[in-house]
Image (cartoon, rainbow, N blue to C red; front, side, top):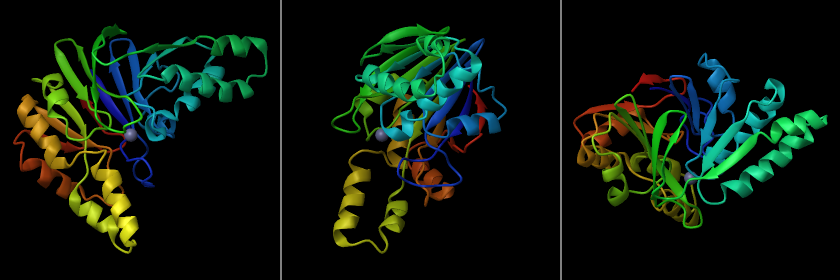
Length: 274
Ligand SMILES: [Zn+2]
């Protein structure tokens, strides 16, 4: 399997160096998009990937920075004459995709374009789901993130190799350690407390409280990501979903407190053979 990061930033954190969350996963003829943050398609093309080759989409959850770019894909479907695409996602993905197709249909200038858009289907992958998608075995578990949204971490296995992607999550060893057991690559979201301190500078007391509550209550520190990688026995830890004021060396330093394997800070365009 080859993964290419088409977006490694965090939602609500405007960053010209990092787009919103999206990973391109290639294996054999399969071309999966794992999350489709807005702008993923430009970064995909920048990375030399064929925007028309996407076979299917797997969404971790429906926050805008992970899912909203799916509309770009549907608009692209109009151009590429409608090869069918299935979107696999958590609870409410059917409602979300119906709305996204509504946007795309505004661009549909003829009945046959509408029929191409009819080629988009949705399959809900609930917690505990195990299935094959385009020759890749995919296992899904729920992770704690936002209380009103289901967020699913995924394990992808093919050709004896394994990749785990957490999506967005707080520290969740009970879900993630078994999922990432012996994984070749664990892609874990991460932030550092020092970055939060930088972001809090100049904010009012209530602004600071909101920032800390918002990030600490829904995301994982790099050290927590390191603990998951260590306890699961993963070989390589890739940190992603990076806030704009993060410093790569601080992310690595924090994760290193717990994990002595290979640590990589993801970057847009980074491509790794798993
Ligand atoms: Zn999220």
